[in-house]
Image (cartoon, rainbow, N blue to C red; front, side):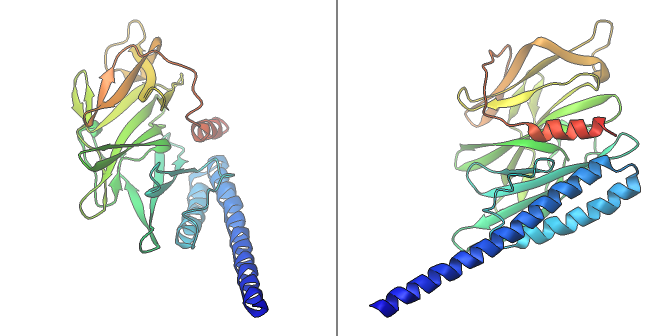
Length: 294
């Protein structure tokens, strides 16, 4: 009896030591990821940013293959966006590299974990946002993606299909910024598809919603889980500006929204807003502050 108890104690101690060593490794990488992401924003030249970004990519790919990385929360990393889907199906590791010509390169990895097989793997996404037009009507697959920096994932389901709605930010260019509502789902091969014709706006059904507005102002877009609305600023052109000149679009004093009904996100005008702590948008704030320091 004493021998069995001793064996159990040894196993517990061994597991504790392994867990402690693993957490030490994660703390090391957690600090390193934060440092490298910060250096990307503060670097003075594009070539230096690219050098640091290569190091960040190498570290991200190493971390994504480490046992336990899917369960680790990386809570001290706030310059990268690291988000878990509400159903714990996948995680997103996501960041932006701002360039001197006022363009932005986006990077993202999807990390998956299957409980039954205890298997984890990742998919690297390829940003095509600078090379496509009519982006609200496009669908991306095979690892392609309309790049953005994400701050939230919303999980909905209809007819046994899971939809993951991503709330994103795009620095766009020197005159305008974009807010993005992107729908992602997994196809029959469990491969990610970005864009789905389930966003019903006043001017038609979209595969993704993009709000473009003046670089001189800021906007908010949040998900209120209690009211089940995505809420965002209503945008209007400044007096004298023509419709479609988005560098002159600014928030009004009203808010619009999207609500998920019968398998579609449906546009709603004049949504009442309530104070909500549901969404932490610190990645957006940190990125924008970093860009302002350049």
